[in-house]
Image (cartoon, rainbow, N blue to C red; front, side, top):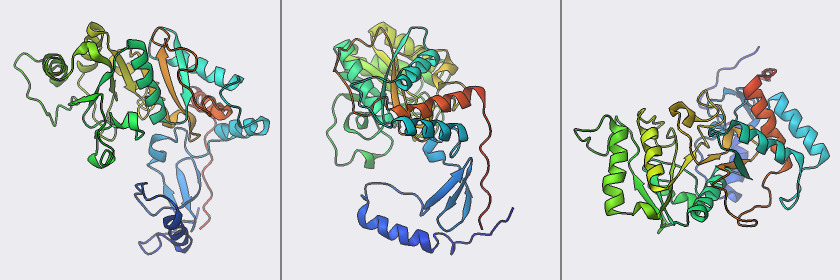
Length: 347
């Protein structure tokens, strides 16, 4: 296989530079681009830019490409579905929607039967969880965590607390009280002598400080948390934290909502990261790797929590037919599959 040494002068190349100029003229500057990479094609872990430069992709579309670029089983599922029909609104029914929901019910990290709301992204999954939690509990307040990232639509942005720039210009956002994430190596709270570890410190802080001084527990609908923080620094909480947080939620009738948009879909060795602590949440938010790049998100909730009525929430593309890509993705992750062939070098 031919290879080529790339220097700083090669990247971006002439075709890439031309496209970058066109992009800057018409695409919103709100996007935070990180490199002048203009993709042409990819297979598996390899990507090529428009000038033929070859790379190994360690980004995976920000944890989206769970099966690599253009896995043949995923591509085949999309092609076969596109030949039948690409869209029907969520006012009607189709089998892929039902099959994927059945699969998500099967792998949901709680014993109770699940109900599934399919959307287009992680932030939409979080928005659905916020609305359902408020409706089910009749409460209006939430707890979020410092360093958390949950999306940038206005409801989910209320929980996002990883970078001030993401909230700047959009305040005030009400209804969310932030507490420290249990990061033992960079603690924001002093441990008490009676605490076993920093996970216990954070839960005690919620119970003894936040619930007594900032927001009453009977006003809190849910606690939204990443099982492992992503943008906040890839922080794994202490072993005691989630069992204690689950107990706190049970005591006060608060829903435990886990944002598995980055950690879910087998990324940590289990279908859901929360399973590493043996804790059952009430609602799970998923997206990113669930469909290998086809825009898809989902909220998976206990059936007993899904008490909202018909037409309480919806969207045009929810459960779209290309959800078949998600079924292929989950099958590859669960059962293996034919490997994605590598690209032949074109340079």
